[in-house]
Image (cartoon, rainbow, N blue to C red; front, top):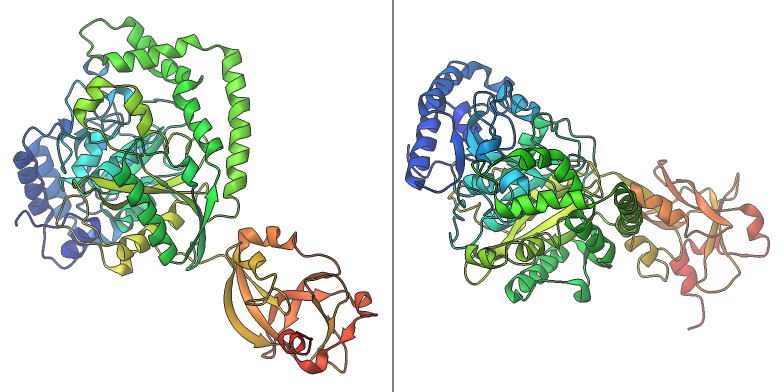
Amino acid sequence: MNSLLDLGLHALRARYANGALSCCEVIEEVLKRIAAAGDDRVWITRVPDQRLRAEAVKLDARRGEIDKLPLYGVPFAVKDNIDVADLPTTAACPGFSYQPEASAEVVRRLVEAGAIVVGKTNLDQFATGLVGVRSPYGVPRNPFDPSFVPGGSSSGSGVAVAAGLVSFALGTDTAGSGRVPAGFNNIVGLKPTPGLLSTDGVVPACKSLDCVSVFALSCADADAVLQVAAEPQATTAIGKTFRFGMLRHADAEFFGDDAYAALYAQAVGRLKALGGTPIEIDYAPFRDAAQLLYGGPWVAERTAAVGAFMAAADGTAGIWPVTRDIVMSGSEYSAVDAFEGQYELGELKAAALAQMATLDFVVLPTTPTIYRVADLEREPVLYNSHLGHYTNFVNFFGLSALALPAGFRPDGMPFGITLIGTAHGERALLAFGARWQREVPLPLGKTTSQLPAAAHDPVLAEDRVSIAVVGAHMSGLPLNGQLTELGGRLESKAKTAPVYRFYALPGDPPQRPGMVRVAKDGGTIELEVWSLPAAAVGSFLLKIPAPLGLGTVTLADGSGVPGFLCEAHATADAEDITSLGGWRAYLKTLPV
């Protein structure tokens, strides 16, 4: 055993499976690393060493069950606002500490799958903050430079994974707490759809918005955890070609951080190289919704969660002053404010989701910049709010999100992007994120771990609908853009069965053909088979004018595919061009 042991989830499972590693050896290595890290302020409470060793012994005795235990022998950390049996829950407030009788549901699932809880991690008190400095237990040391903030509120969990102390960690995410530490620590941060992972046994921040999140070194590892922690809903893959939303130049805010701005532009370029078509979005409704979280009545939900405790607590409770100010400010809002806030949010959500309707995801900087610990001492509220500029709206809109490493500033500090997808789109994001990690090779956290073999990457089927086109929608012709702008992809070139008559329809440009199935005297017509994401088919149908429509087109091999057909009555005054065998051949007969 040595410090080069790869604690990646799949790396451990492979060595467990072939008998090259025992759980006892892994736990000894974890304890050695924790000791070497010294006072890194990652942990609030740890499982006692001897109890960890005893758990490892019990698991080694169950080696024969490894196929039934998907997280066999995998060490993980838990943010200290999530209950773990036999360990106190503090939410980073000593006076709030209590002893839970049972573990949170998500922790129970992971432990039953063979994972080993190592301890409870530090956080911004009561999960109120994105910086990682609002804790009486100290500031977890950012492994890339301890003078910079680790990100919060799940600060200890992010650092524990990035520093190679555990294989994965649980955080929570209300305003970005499961994504910001991922960006600042060069790791993956999965924020599932609100409600997908149980929040039973989680100290609430904003109960209507809180999510349990997952930090890991790779998307493959995060996916393995997700499939144990919840029952992900069926989702379809992001295709080889895809459409993604990006910031307009006028909306891109980096608070003076030119390096982050350049890295975001570089990430957009890499997405294009991966087959993406960038679509600029109007960020205003996203931004305005983000501002509601701390500048609107939702602050009162934090007051509802822990306001009574704070009001009754004395000076020995260890309440962080900035946290107290934020939480108690919620009492200033009325029931009228709450309703008006909901109305405003509904309008903003509708405007934002309308823009996302034809996109596979939106890509944003995880944060606009990163600050030093000393900066937060000067500006504890303003700079914290800057870090939520691209995160606060996501749970308001009920979306899934995935933070990914995306490069480094010249000073060596990490930069990350976040992919924001549909509700219950987390596995599609993870599958794409795995592709991103292979195409954009970067270190995993600040470890020597390697990406798992490609065989472990999430694999999902694409949900696409084939459409046969015979006229102006073919490649290079005037209406082809109606397909490509919706994520259309050319799949093949083919011919119909000899059962159609083909006509040049009268009308204004662009000229269109009409294809009609006949009982006899039919011809063979050249066509292209394109595919569209299933979700985009409705939008495409709205672009098809009468007398054209979609029906089943029979191909030369006898198979059927949805495609363009024409109502027979519309061909009465049309030119029959069946003998030419296709639209391109007809176009060649026209005068230039």
